Length: 243
Image (cartoon, rainbow, N blue to C red):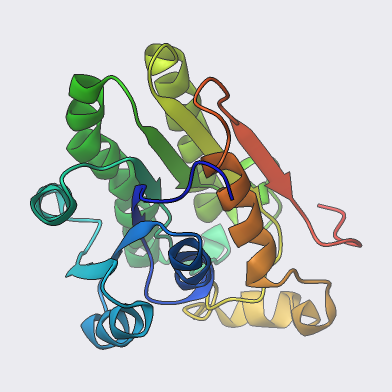
């Protein structure tokens, strides 16, 4: 695909799910991919699978220093950062009455602060170059909320606001894309501890879900556009998902 070959692309949340699936596709298209996540064992296996044009950096996006280190190591290895995808996120949803405050804090740290730290780490480099592309994964929960997902949805609304403001500030030189996936077959949500959520959404296994490839294709579409085209927002839902 045009405009992918030799691009240096950093992906957070890359050890599994849509991050890993997209990394595999990008390598086949000739990109150089930097994998970032917390689970070193999975990162190492994936980097070995992808070959010499891939590297990994163990990264906790809730730590600003880790994002700074990620960008620094990428530049040391590959020279530049062409694309930075803030993809890491968690979804331990619960009802407000349950008071899962620690989980709220975790979602704020990873889903919001992680995006901000990623932008802060890579933006000065891209501005100096006068080019670059920053992406972030929001959710359809960042467009419309529903009972039980208030804090998660709030973090994803925040991603939408952050990325739209960033777009307006840097639109002359830097591409900005926000991806809003609907229900997807992935690990997202595996960390739900709320018994009320598990009871209220017991039929989730039967709801329509997209394959990870659908998100990968959307991200690659955005990255592959000509230099004068910026794809700003992409919303994807599986057929049959109404919210």
